[in-house]
Length: 389
Ligand code: AMP
Ligand code: MG
Image (cartoon, rainbow, N blue to C red):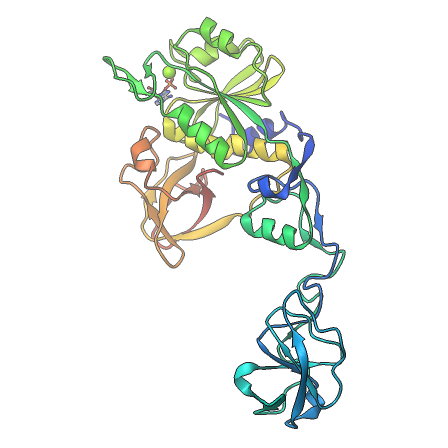
């Protein structure tokens, strides 16, 4: 039996970083950024007003000022404000030369070209300073992160029309099993719908990889070998037949062709295959769908991170609102749901059993319970793993 960390290390050592490519920012969401986005100018680009009001000199105190013009967003005032003067200004508009404070409309009164203010303004009031968000030359989005909408916005503000990202990994997905029916079709005796290929395809899409779903094969090693031979992908992921039974097709097909089958000290997900088939890194997952979801998050996801140069996620923790049992000597992945206030609870009564795919729909994440813990008690702190790793 191999411990989880050793197995994940073996998996990630099979892959190397993919090349990068330049894509328009408009189509970059979800991609892993491969080079820092640096802002060419200051953000904000110039001193500007945070309110509609009057730009003026603070040292004039409460004295009346003559209104000499207007500064609107995109249409700056191009003169200079001297003592006794003010410029009407809109939110986001450049603060004119000479002005050093803004008095909001509601604290001012304008009549016959003269503005009076209720109180003496403070120097710098209601002015957003150039470079106060980021200075020219600063990194605004760091390489290794996934481009979220907020990061796309930051990159756009920094003037990046295109960004350097890692190529999306292409991942071949193959389900095996004589019992599998075509998705959505009628079920014959003993048949089940293939849950694994859609689950994996969705997980791959969700983390920015490109799924290449192959038509499922039965428990026939020759059919499996035919399906995988010549596949052009960065990674192959199969499900089912990874154990030691009489019909374990993946083991029969691939054990003598570069894939090693081992028991990993995890629950669910114990039988695992790992290796290189036909030059392509290959992961053979067990058949039960919850095992597939957990194995994706634990084993496949870190491989995708290496392929794309994505930084490791922070480990999150939460407090168990209720206790549950954990198997001895295996790291447990217990489906949980979020309560409020940082509390979590098992999302289904059946615990971490590997066949409970319908119950997994209610889960928000997995709690990760160390191999040497055999019971989680109410109030214990538990580590969390996202459903997608
Ligand atoms: P196996 O590892 O092939 O022995 O499969 C273990 C269990 O997972 C069996 O109950 C299979 O019917 C089930 N299983 C295997 N592949 C799939 C699949 N693609 N979708 C849903 N269940 C599956
Ligand atoms: Mg099977």
